[in-house]
Image 1 (tube, rainbow, N blue to C red):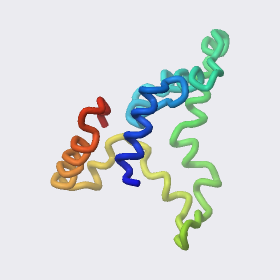
Image 2: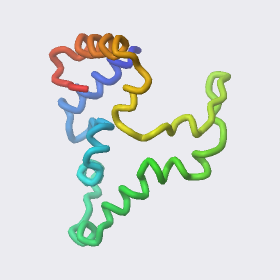
Image 3: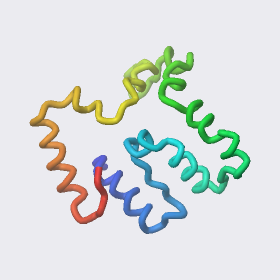
Image 4: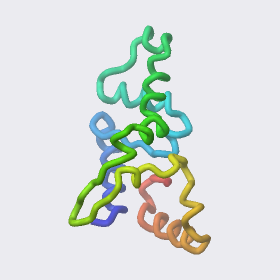
Length: 129
């Protein structure tokens, strides 16, 4: 299955059944992590209490789940993930943790081609990447 169909399937399902499928975008989470932590907690049926919010529990959880914290865990700095005969270092999954870093890896031509493909694949869906 193409990645586009996979993403679009979840997008459509999140619109059809918003109580069952939560569709989050990395860029949005990075911009407003506390807002999205609250949204996720509410979605799974475990919203934060007023006391937890006033005591900064949400912010503490966001910090504990931050890119820097996760990247620096021993299990993520070392170790190997084996799949289909390939061995991948755990650290490979943690680059910069920044939205938009693709600009450092794609040429302008590649970015334009990707934009064209995304526009074509998601046309009429309302999904904006």
